[in-house]
Length: 477
Image (tube, rainbow, N blue to C red; front, side, top):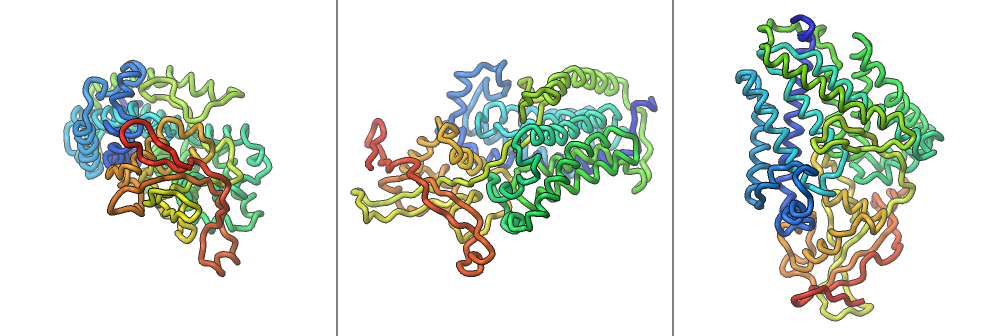
């Protein structure tokens, strides 16, 4: 079955699978370390309440049958251990059928997490990991040549990621067409990185070049992925370079890293190393891959239709298994950065002289003297939602006030999501939230003050709240 095998891609498959398993590892560890405060039994949006409200068919997950914090932790750490073993080569050291089951277990476990994760897991890279992880089930292992059909499905996935992102920009905010979006983006993106200040301060003509290059990378280069070699490899290299530029300029969880991994499916590795000899792929595997390819071809109708639609959606799933999704980001660019700063005080009686102390988050801007940190590919879910909440109070519905209540309780799980708790001995008596306008300092301001940010108070976001004695929530303003 020469048509089925693509031996020249053996090295690309090897690196792709190991790197994908590494991303799975990050995803499972991220879930394990953050779930108790976010979606645990006493979380801000508890899984038990969600599964009682949403039926299994709408969000397939193992946790519809049974949920406990201990079981969720076991699943996350089991997924992390399995991902680590696959990254180390375990799936290549076992028979093909067992390798398929290992990859399927990773996908099923993470699907179960995402489908009960609610707003904390509503990001495009969650669906992207699930779709890539599903296709990896059928990539084979060291005992079989890479299936050409799966490699093409991975290329098609990468095409949708890149071309979808390019279309949503071109159709969206006019600043993309005017080549001015990067005058704002590095400063207003959800979670700036350690180099974002420097990217923002690049000359504006260079920003124009960046935007133009991005249009080429996302609207032209993806078609090269579908062409014969060596064009496909050159296109993949262009995607990788573009994504590394994005890695340097911000924190977007594992989105950029996973896109780089997907690009490997278009890289012909034969010039780098001769392929090994393989046994013929077993018939059951060939039939399975063909069936999966047929299903994915049918499911691709919806994302393909979405891309050519004038009402293009971005980061949407058309089925509950997160297969054949549509992708895209930053169809509109925020021009001003607002941040919610949460403060507490241990004073029982509030006056104009009350001394407030700030809570510090791990990733999102707070202390103006603190250089933004690098966290990607790790995903700080609370920090990201705080960015959305600053855009509009509507994004904070259902979780922000419970979050404040946890701070008033001194909840250990919630406090572990923060960088600094100003009340280590006992919880505060009151907590409030203020909305600030943040901007990067200029070169001169940076030299004079040492600050990375300049901030101006806009308004009160949440008036002072006191811990309720038993029922309800008392507010004192």
